[in-house]
Image (cartoon, rainbow, N blue to C red; front, side, top):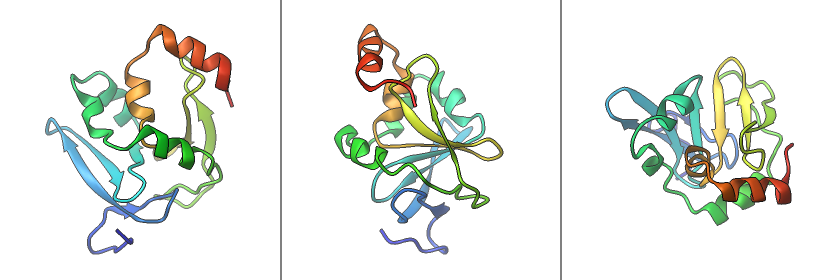
Length: 132
């Protein structure tokens, strides 16, 4: 769905479509893109949701589609407009995301589910993809 400030919480930094607020458990509110299904987490929200049972249920996007959007690396923070830093998870370096230290982070579809569930397979994925 095209971005409309009256209907959406913010504009997706990857594809430019509208993002919708999604609440989990009454205390965590994230933003999910209506098109690419990428997720925006304000500072601390990803870590809070990672510790919640079934928190990955909010990551409804197709991981294969998320990998396509992973190629779009140079994005601006949807809160302040500054260029976001390219990061990878230190425990799972194959998970690449973008971060604004002041406002939060963006993960492509499927990345949060992978981030939440650390397995031995992640070690092998990190060998293939590597850190940023």
